Amino acid sequence: MTAIQILFILSAVVILGAAVMVVSTKNLVHAALYLVAALFGVAVLFALLDATFLTVVQVVVYIGAIAILFIFAIMLTRREMRDQGEQLNRGWGAAALIGLLTFGGLFMLLSSWRGFNGTAAALPSGFDGVVELGAALVSTDAFVLPFEVASVLLLAALIGAVYVAGTKK
Amino acid sequence: MTFWSDPINFVAQWLRDVFTGWGWSSGLANAIILLLGALVLVSFAMLLDIFLVWIERKVVARFQDRLGPNRVGPFGIFQPFADIVKLILKEDITPVGADKLVYNLAPILSLTSVLLLWAILPLAATIYGADLNVALLYLVAAGALGTLSIIMAGWSSNNKYALLGAFRMVASMVSYEIPMVVALLIPTIITGSMSVREITLAQGDGGVWFFIVAPLATVIFLISAIAELGRSPFDLNEAESEIVAGFHIEYTGMKFGLFYAGELLHAFTFGGFLAILFFGGYRFFGLENLHPLVGAIIFLVKALIGYWVIMWVKYTVPRIRIDHMLGFNWKFLTPLSLVVLMVTAVLNQALAGSETWVYALVMFLANVVVGWLTLEILRAYSRSQRKAEEPVVESVAQAAHH
Image (cartoon, rainbow over all chains, first blue to last red; front, side):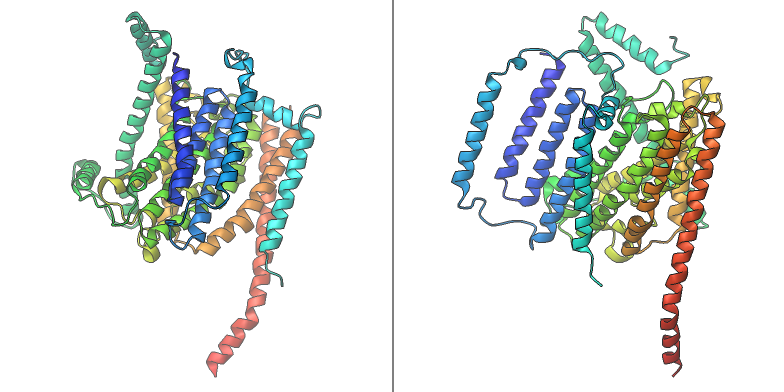
């Protein structure tokens, strides 16, 4: 077993364990912190794949912004920091069924995929993923249209947020 | 490669030969050597941290017209060791109702988020932890972990002041991250790379230090770094006159020590990043070519100067109010940084292929123009504000007179 495989198994155990704790812990802030641990584990997986840009963006976006927003939302909306209520509501049966079906479908799809036994092709020397990504985002034969559409969407969301939050004079 | 010309890599190569000579696989040998390297780097940072406690106390004393520690050792240089003994001997208190695991994890994560930054600091041309091609984003990511540690400390302490401190810290970190990221983008645009090693190299042969090319970005980075550090005038997270000590109010002994050490090392590290991004890093007019250790010393001196500027601001400028702090960021720093970014990007493209001195001169003049326009807009704004306030002041004065 190579060092990469050991690291992969370790981080997979951390991700799965943390993901189970997210839904099973009674304390909401603990759930958010376990979510941070799971997302950090995914960043480790990206690092194992040499995807440096995705690794840091995973940490910046999911830990730096989303997890912190989650924790804020919990802190500002609950009167007490610990939630004592029921963890399940009436829809749990349907949710479990959909979850199982999704997992089964993914399992069926992936079990017929041959990539598991293959090894990834080595990256050519001097390959810089960030440069390639940057060029692809603004190149007309690649992703310039989705990139611009996403920018316009975010700008609209930004203006909308300012409008909703702004006081009318 | 000899020991004299490149000590760190020479030792690494020697260890690699020894380990493979023992029959280890090269992968295992490499992993052990990388672990040892990380251990050496972290130990160096922590030793430096002990020294920084003395520097900080000495400098603050001078700013406040005092002598500072001067009893333990020459110039009080062994004072930090006395501090450490005191911190270790103190009673370790966990408040009632605290969330034990999170409470104990927070100081460790706080110091870790700072030590992570040392992985990408190039101390010299051949002495660096990792040459990441996304180093500047990594800097932001490590800052996100620091924010998380403060939230954890504030929430788990079961103390209202601690929680308020954490709220304030997160509000300021989340907002000041934007001008900081934009300021980081400017050296990236000029260099064409996010790697701090490339940025240092670009300021060397045939290049100029980036504070000439991007003076406004230097100032914006310094201001947002001070806000990210939570130091005065942005130290609302631990405003002792309002919320006692903020997020670390309940921590005693060495757990408090970890927060304190983390803050000092963080300030020094940001001094280092200021040196790398805008003041040439380990380069000083070819002096760094003598020996890698000379480069490392040049870097540490520049980082200390940056740290000194941060201390200078901290002990000179009084704390500002939270709404002023956020207003300053959103209404002034963020728009200014975006304008500077656009001007830099356009000029960088227009001046591609021109002589270095033409490039530097035009960039500098563009920054001067943007800075002058900013000051004019601010002056016009404050004049209109004063005009709006004058009648109020007069009526108040008349009322007081009657």
